[in-house]
Image (tube, rainbow, N blue to C red; front, side):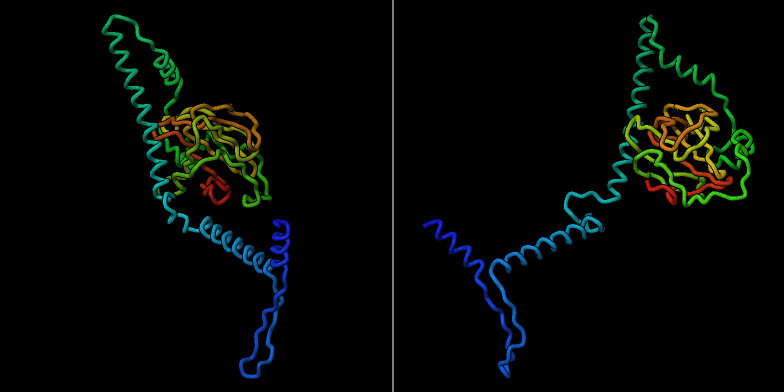
Amino acid sequence: MRVEEKKKFYSKLKNQYRLIIYNDTTFQSVWSMKLSRLKVFTATSLMSAIIVVLVILLIATTGLREYIPGYPKAEYRQMLIRSALKVDSLEMELAKRDRFFKGIQTIMSGEVPEDDHIVEAESRSSEVEFQQYNHDSIFQDELLAEQLSLSLQPENDNKTDISRMHFFVPVKGVVTEHFNSSSDHFGIDLVSEANARISSVLNGTVIFSGWTLKTGYSIYVQHEGNLVSVYKHNSELLKNEGDQVSAGEAIAIIGNTGELSTGPHLHFELWHDGKALNPEHYIDF
């Protein structure tokens, strides 16, 4: 009985019907269409699926997704990133304070404190040569212009078209501060995960690799076409002056060094013929 019922059900689905539209005045057939229950069900299901997909794409690719309950707005995401940076800085300061008080307690008890971090800091500070110049307007300072001369490569009448260059992303992260020449911020700030590696954006030669008071561990790479890329506030430098690097090769580790740094991030600059460029116009971060 069940087999017969199934056969009847399938036969009903395949039964052909005709939808006819008549002229109400002349009763002549205007339009007709042959239908079956299976075709109607299939067409309805397909149209419903298309509508659902279109609605999902509309919400996912427009600002409508911010109206979904639980989805954070762009302002809230920016606040979360800044709060995370401040919390990280506070943790570092608290750790320094704890080490300081621990050292005081050790001295008061007549013991010798563990000074590994102090010795390391003193050894680094003793090797630093402090110079008075603006690191964010690096090519406008005569002192650093002599050190990072753009004449390392021979002059070429055929200038390289920068817009056609394929730049490697220096580090995967979120842009927290954009290029703004009016406020002397000649680059962008990128926040990424801890100990993330920083890569060279193009093939080139390292023309500066060292410590500065305001920007910490910094590295500068000379590329073809009088193009220079700058990477600041690193925790560690992996290349020395004169080293040849390839696009995508690791040259530093992201950090939080220098007086101008407010948290672990990379300050990235791009210079061409002594003029600062907006990196976001050439690199998709």
